[in-house]
Length: 182
Image (cartoon, rainbow, N blue to C red):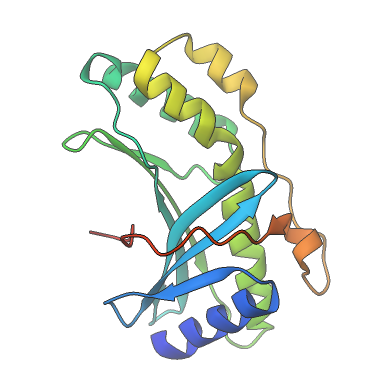
């Protein structure tokens, strides 16, 4: 399965779950907007081939104050240790937090279900922590308090995915600058 076929499957998944999705200048990626339990999430899906893989990327919409950068690195490291998908990264040059979840796609199996599972897990992992990470980036605080406040993701139940399984509810907030691999 090539990149464009994988991306087309993702577009269909988004339409089926009323997730806003936007084409980007990169033909192998798309931006999305979705609401997860009251948190509006914007990110990018990047499709790869050889082997087929989908990456769900969210560059969180804040910069960490320089005086909190070391604490943010510690916080993300500890959050990765407690999170099933260990996907938080800190960009020290831009002082930004990036969440990236890569998921290999087995093209012999139900591709749409695999995409739904990867997307649902990514959103369920980063949506609850985003508010707490933004607060820490600007005000600092105790790392252990932020860790306790961050909700851990639940896995999607087996079978055909639905919006209820993914915990997703659409709320269009308009297109934004893609937050992909730049």
